[in-house]
Structures are given as C-alpha cells and as structure tokens.
Image (cartoon, rainbow, N blue to C red; front, top):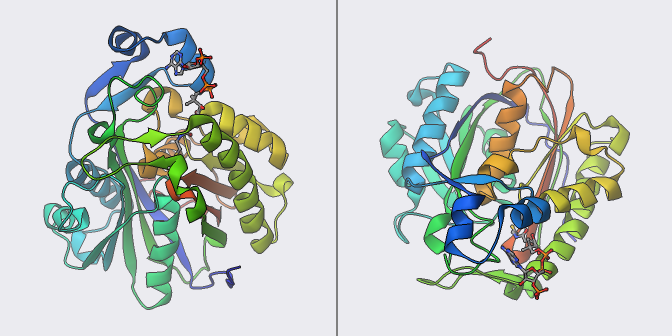
Length: 321
Ligand code: COA
C-alpha cells in the first residue's frame, strides 16, 4: 500500500501540443494485410484508422515544440524534460536526451517507461520536480509502436500505432491543478503483455481487457477520493485509448456517462504513452474543458501498470487565447 499526500505545490498545465505522423493506415488497408475486416476492428475496438511513420524523438520534439508555442514559452524557460515512452529510439541514451537537443532545451532530461500509463506517471513526476523547486517542466508521451508490432498478428497489429502529445506544466501561485493522483503496478501480471528485446508484442487480449476494466475503476476511485470528489463531480474523463469497449465498461462501473469522455481512438489507435495527451489536447482544442472543470485522466498498461490524476482545469492552455 502506497502512502501519498495530495500535491500542494501549485503547478498547472499552461500549454499543450501533439504530433501524428503523415502516413494513415485504414482498417481496409489492414484487411489486405491480415485476415480481418473494417467491421470487426471498428466493432471490437472503436478504431478506424491510425498513423504510422516518424521516430520517437522526432514526434516528441514536434509535440513538445507545439506545447512550448501554445504556452508562449521559450525553450530556455524549461527546467526539466520528462519523456514517457515504451519505444525509445535507442537503448542508450534516453530518447529524452535527443529531444532535449532537438528542442534546444538547457535542462535535465529523462525517460519514463510505465507502458501506457507513462504519461500520467510523468505528469505526476513533473509536478514532483516543481514541488522540489523547478519552475517549468515539459512532459511528453511519444511512441513509435509500429517498430514492435508483428504485422502478421491480427490480434495486435490492428490496435497499436504512433504519435505524441506534450504538456508544459508551470509553478503557479494560484494553487495546484493536481487535486489527486494514483499510480500502481502489478508485476505478477507482466506475462499478459510484454515485448522482449528485438521482438514483437505478445498480448493476452482478453486477460488484459478484464484487468484493464478493474484497474481503470480502482485507480480512478483512488484519485477521486484523494481529490475529495465523487464521480458526479467529474466534468471530463480522458482515458487511455486502448479499446472503446474498455472505456465504456469502466465508465459504467464508475457511474460516469460515456458522453463525458474524450475519445480519439477512432483516428489514432492505441498510441500508449501518447494516448492520454492526444485525447486531452483534442478536448481542449474543441472547447470541451473550461476553467474550474474537474478532469480525470486514467490509464493502464503493460506491467501491469495503472495511473490516474484528477486535475482542476485552470483554463490556461493555451495562453494562445
Ligand atoms: N479480425 C478478425 N478476427 C479477429 C481479430 C481480427 N483483427 N483478432 C482476433 N480475432 C478473432 C479471434 O481469433 C477469435 O476467433 P475464434 O473465436 O475463431 O477463436 C475471435 O476474433 C474473438 O477473439 P477475442 O480475443 O475473444 O476477441 P475480443 O473481443 O477479446 O477482442 C481484442 C480482441 C484484442 C480487441 C480485445 O481483447 C482487447 O482489446 N483486449 C485489450 C487489449 C489492450 O487494451 N491492449 C493494450 C493494453 S495497453
């Protein structure tokens, strides 16, 4: 059992950005590669297309640059870069070092691998750096999952894809946006979803599905409890975009209407660490979040990890107006 005290450091998201590579792979194209159909994939997962191409550093840098621009912040204003990824470009060095150079940042940089929970882990880590004295942290989730997909395995190649999403968090005198958070891992379930070095993803789909539904609910409840909020208080849910049916079932268990979720899975597939910031950015850009809203981020992934955070939206991203 972990013990946490609600973060009271005073930090909030002040800018967001995303990147999706140009190549779009549709379900119909996939049906020419493996024994599947657009109907099957759409019905069972909610996915209709996904993006391929790029490098993890390249996508991360594009999303990071967009987030900096959105926040109106010069690269010199960033004190730390935390990059969530399960598909680093190299084993060593960390991809965050490459991204740091590409963005012209003068700060510490590190990768976080918590699978699809990585962005929320990194967001919490970023708030931690601010609690320890930093002014601004750039948090990015970026993946090139196409690298570790077996393109002849119809149970996995229909799901995973590439992309990146980023957020700038900044110290704030007005209080914190992070009202509650929860991270966990259960290594006893690592055999459900893994990838050996140089190989491709193995996934026990149904086991992952069942576990995902349980941990999404459990983690969300922990964060809401810490934030002193109930399901009725949540204005927007930004779930990990793994399978629309997992999100529907989790929402039902939590008592939150599905209409309150931000979903981009139909056009992105499962982009692991990038999925939550991609969906959050989409909600922000479409005017679905306003100042004072309670936003629940919740995800799960290999490990099996889970992570959630309740944010009180400040209305600042971006300062783009
Ligand atoms: N197209 C057509 N048929 C497919 C298929 C595909 N792409 N993939 C699997 N099938 C078949 C199976 O072979 C099986 O056939 P059978 O009944 O003849 O044996 C049938 O569809 C049902 O397979 P099943 O595994 O029970 O399907 P499902 O409804 O559980 O959906 C997943 C499969 C992978 C979509 C689903 O289990 C899932 O999303 N799991 C969670 C995965 C996840 O979230 N991973 C990321 C974690 S971060």
